[in-house]
Length: 201
Image (tube, rainbow, N blue to C red; front, side):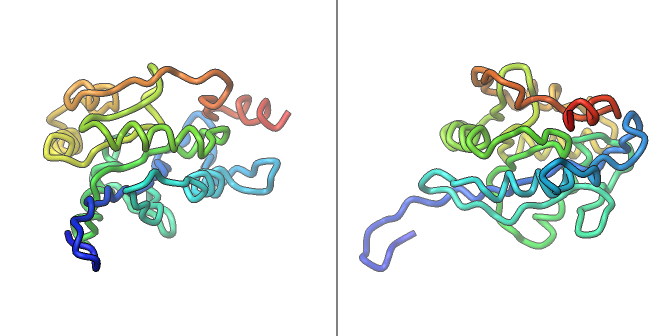
């Protein structure tokens, strides 16, 4: 790629932020993506807000966030009950179907309202330098997921029932850089009614 001045410019890394929101919310007993937080946002709105506040590193372009799941504006799973990997596979298929060039996904679960844009920017900065997944310690979500041939191969296999449909297994296949886990309660996720009640205090 050549700039107007004639100099070679570095290719940009195109990143698609993704909110995983296709779960059944069986432990919560209702659609947790629609639960209201004390700031007035739903969990889904909060997750999208976190992603939209990211200031990407130089050389990175953030696409508009996509939401997995069968909901208005969401990308429904192509294979039912395939878990988070089914959601990611559907997102990848959507990007390819519409010829939306994308180098990596920045994935956040809908039920982690205490994540900060700063933490997500750390994942982006690390992900830009490696061809592996990136996460914090043993917390496999949120994560940076490169959309290379190996990632796509595993996502397709998991959706088809031919590979273990877990994020841990995916990372074992493609490799994962585990950054030191930050301190604090950023990783709190809301699975049960008592988790929600405790967060609201």
